[in-house]
Image 1: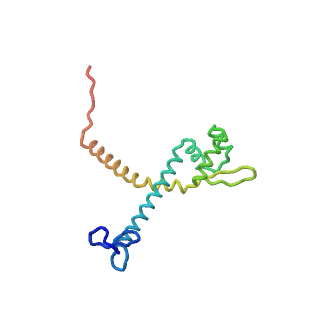
Image 2 (image 1 turned 30 degrees about the horizontal axis):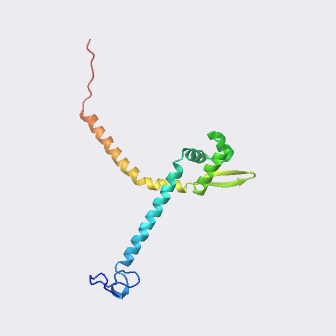
Image 3 (image 1 turned 90 degrees about the vertical axis):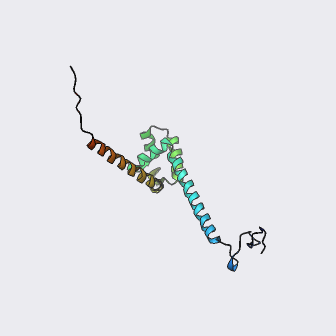
Length: 160
């Protein structure tokens, strides 16, 4: 153990962190937990960013909208959206790899259906914003209600 910093705190020779009783780094557990929490937050943020990047594309959103009601084949989706089948296939591949859609094989065609889990992540991310806006819209509604009650209705009369 050395006092390399000159502040009276001993440091371990392996990682340079301060050493307390029993040879453990001071606040080492807290630092480790903070790092894990920061890593988890970073991973969550990257996952949500990826979700938003995927659904930012209008054709993918249109495909997801179609799949809300029922599972469909590539050909059915292409016909309804009036898009070339290879284009639909490319978008479906992106959606499938990201987990937005699942596919099953039915004879010689592949049927796609919506997987709601990634969208539930978006919904969970949006929840605090919904609460924020809901409170503000409610306050506006109350304010407008008070304004309506405090100002008497005046009729405009036409002068002839």
